[in-house]
Image (cartoon, rainbow, N blue to C red; front, side):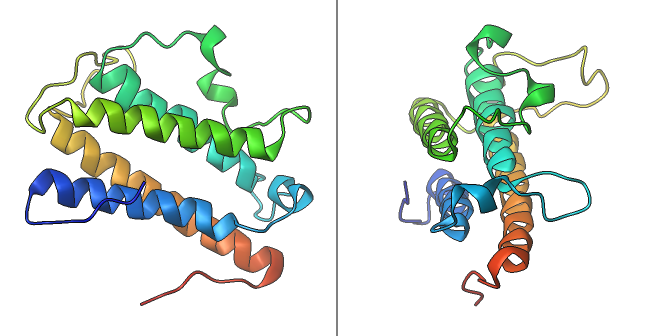
Length: 168
């Protein structure tokens, strides 16, 4: 997943995103299923729910739907509104696998598109007055969102068992 950053803008952006993706997975490493499903903040989200949100509402939505124009039907996954809720019969490992799969699919899309390319599809009905105009802006948006959620997971992990991620 990690990519060496060079002077190339695309490589730098991809490396930043990959670093955040690794952080998301790394901060949760070793937690048992019960801990991954336990809400630790008043809002009630769970670590495994946040991973599913990142898989469906971030990686799948921004790269497969927006950048590549893939139609994402509700039959293809849980509805976006429910992405934060992981059914009891879905294992945490299955959610982690979903995230890894969506990351791989996103990377394949990014391998074949220019930073200057316009989104193939935009949900005008959802955001009539806001738009990201190219893949570069989408990548920056996804890096920001993933980093924000990595920070949420840092706080959750520390509350669960005191473990913290390496801070430089």
